[in-house]
Image (cartoon, rainbow, N blue to C red; front, side, top):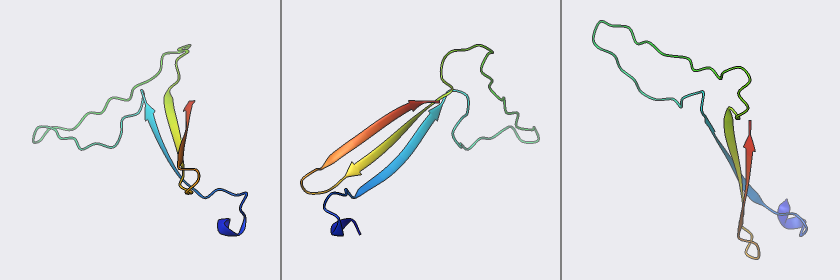
Amino acid sequence: MAAQHPEWALGFQDEVWWSRVAHPSMHSWSEEGKALHLIEKEVPKGDPDPKALACYGLWLGEEDMQQMWLRFVAL
């Protein structure tokens, strides 16, 4: 469809985010017979720092473009 519209750009998008509150999915373990205890982190009330950072990347692979556009967003 993009080939039929020369003013369009064909791109490939990806997204990733990092959080200072949530941990990524990880393997964990505990001693045999003991329960695993997870600690839920909380942001202190009135903390002005963002809880997470997201990065969106768009690759424009056209022969005359060959560009990577990045956008960072504080959440």
